[in-house]
Amino acid sequence: MEYQNVSRRDTHATGKKLTLPTLLTALAAALLLSACAPAPEQQKVTSSANPDAVQAHLEFLASDLLEGRDTGERGHEIASHYIATQYKIMGLKEAGTDGYYQRVPFRSARLADTQPTFVIATPSGEHELQYRRHFTTTASTAEEISEVNAEVVFVGYGLVSETFGINDYEGLDVENKIVIAVSGGTQGLPSEEAAHLGAQKQRQAAERGAVGFITLHTPEREAVRPFEQAVLFSGGARMRWLDTDGNAHGEDGQLRGSAYLDYRAAEPMFADAEYTLEDIWAALEAGERPPSFALNASVTMRRESIFSEIDSPNVIGMIEGSDPTLKHEYVLYTAHSDHIGLARDFSTTSKVNNGALDNAAGVAVMLETARMYAEQVAAGSGPRRSIMFAAVTAEEKGLLGADYFAHNPTVPLTSIVANVNLDMPVLLYPFADVIAFGADHSSLGDVVARAAGQHNIALSPDPMPEQAIFTRSDHYTLVRQGIPAVFLMTGFTSQDEDENGGEIWGKFFAENYHRPGDDIETLTETYGGIRYDFGALFTDINFEIGMEIANADEAPYWLSDSYFGKIFSADSPVRD
Image (cartoon, rainbow, N blue to C red; front, top):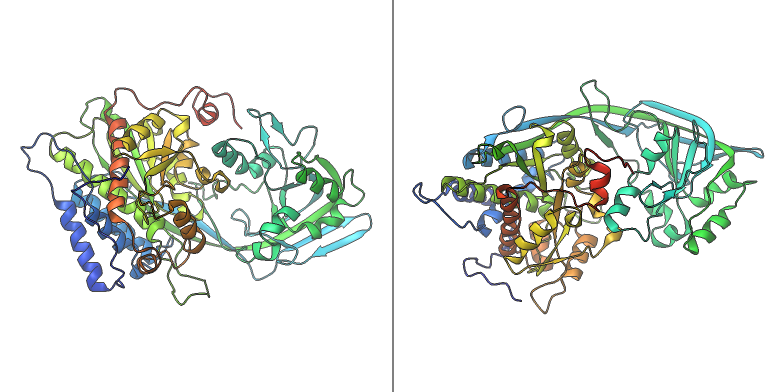
């Protein structure tokens, strides 16, 4: 069905290069639109998102002047100040630890100029591998000099799940050993559960006493992405947030060595073993789980890391609920304000990764959503529960700003009843459906369906489970704390019969995502411009989701058969 709304205008991007005057115009427009509120005597309003406001916010945040909003850099600080200013204009209460700010301390680590080493010792002798030819690794955020020497155990896919009856460690002793695993192993599992399990491999090894973790490149992966390409962008800086004792959260030094290893360089490791590498590849090709077994070899890995410490803010505002009791419960909107900074892509003359859709678009939607709530409050019809808005930092570094908030919330964690996450809506076509990650696990699924249905938008299943998107955005950190969450993505169906939404989405992901081409000028030249009218529609749907949650008598709840409800809810005995 063709979506129509006569109150919206077609507001495609003009394609003009942003200059300081146009930025100031966009800022002025955003301030004016945010400041508008209905007359105090009005008691009930129907709020609608303004596409001009979405455009004004996005154009400012995606400006070259913000230099890609990299975590800890000046451009991201400017973006954060802009967001805090918008909160203030709207009348949001300060909900950080320092006004609207919750500053997050980070340790950034990069490999030293001394190259990492990797040596395989077997009964036939030693085999020294070459960095970036045979293996690659990353810096450690736990130790400046980390070295490990231990026997090696092959653990198949390295997966463990009581729920799905998987234990690739069964019968193995990996205490003080280095484990080696092939990627994958979640084929046939539901996509969101598979994404979660795949992200837990190193934790599973560490919990069983392993001291190192090696991921083995395979012939199957070689056919898709050759090893020499896989290492091109490896070895970059890593970042972790610091706890009150100055320790890097999530990296306690248990795994003192890690590497990604070309299968051809691994052959000496499997000499005289119970199974050969050919046996493993045959099992993978047949769709079988490979065997797990000890190897007749040991490995020594060494790396030197250089530390630096920075901080960067989450920016948090709040609208207080109207119900005397329910106002102490919170619906949390999140959108990451950072991007990846200046470009290192030598195929283009652009020097900035602007991140227009990733995620200036999500922040623009969140700011306009906040304005709509403020409009409701001014009219005397505000939400019963309180609404929090968190522009979180360092998503591109590993969901770190959101994870810091999840471990250091500025309100009691148990009082957060739901998370609505806003990340990279691909606003390049008139979408006819949305995908809601997390919707199948809690009562939020029905809420999303009703909110989308109000605007004649369908709810569709995940069209690309292999991308593991559920674990790649900020809501995942709240889910791991037991909070039901939903994350909407624009679907692949276009209301324009002459367009294929899936092809447009795929083209953006392949050619513009995390590249300088995610900027207003390129998106205009390539796709005809950003659909700010459908950005407003996307805002309306997310606003309706939050408003229903906020006004319901009952808080959202995990469904009884939800995998994530079982493993992360407070009373859960399961921990996959």
